[in-house]
Image 1: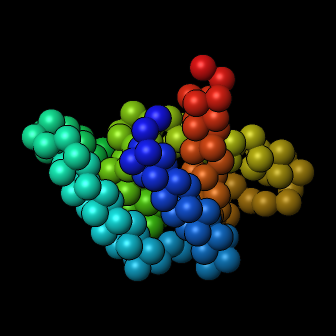
Image 2 (image 1 turned 90 degrees about the vertical axis):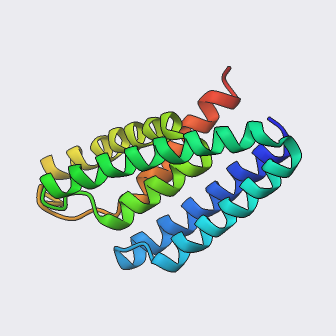
Length: 156
């Protein structure tokens, strides 16, 4: 992992920690946080472009296109499932895709949903929560990110 990549993953980690805390406290992820993450990603992309040139531009365009398609899929899922996944969560996942790519974001989503199920199913069986109760999902995305990151960089 090079220095710029480490900065990207560190910024994403800080974004996820902040979003998880806000989501647990307020049950929402503020747009100002997501906008700041978007601006930081554009600045990092600019630095990457000046370091490597056209290769980064082409790679960045592909990341943007794939990220937008991923975002459209998540929005459709949210609309079809009658907002079972909040739009703040969808925007957070879109930002994650810009920082780390769609494949890794999908992996984080999968791990996060798996951990949410592992935590919530026993609570539902015990009667502590109901099936229709809302959950802050950003903490689970953070756990999925940490799991994916540790698996990729520490175990391989």
